[in-house]
Image 1 (cartoon, rainbow, N blue to C red):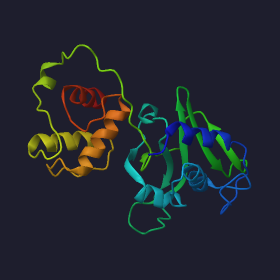
Image 2 (cartoon, one colour):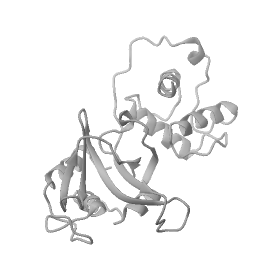
Image 3 (cartoon, rainbow, N blue to C red):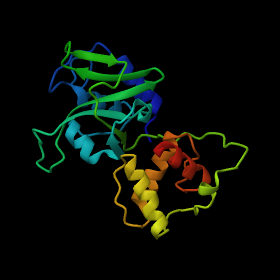
Length: 225
């Protein structure tokens, strides 16, 4: 798994590099997705050169940016427009990509035609979608609260894990989809649902075990509210 810190450090160290497309994916010239190629290569990994393919094939979860608090360190962010769909699959054109290198304050690094260089931005204006990159370790192990007291409507919900089926799984999947995760509400707690749950848990500093218990239910309810 790729280190988030090293990924972010490599993006930060690229600040000021010249923009060139297609470039050499290094300090001599780089475009937006080429910067990801460079940073992944620095950790012995590979990713496709192209923001549209990264959106379609190299994310474990993704969604539309509704508020800056959704963004987490190490996430990719995208700019999208409906026209110019390069793969003609109805998903539109994810024509630009950057990386969140910190959240407080927000900092997004990207290779930009604005100034023709790698630059930093301190807000999410113009960025429309977020994505958790495949191969990147987003797991954040945190101390669990000493108290396990939860509201009655949360403690009444069942504990769900891989292999579970039924209406409560549908409820879980719909809640996650309402938070802009890509997920079909089929009532089956399969591998995709488990990975989405793990991403949600990491984003909210819960134990990343893929099991939906009282703390995860509570976080879901609070986030949706």
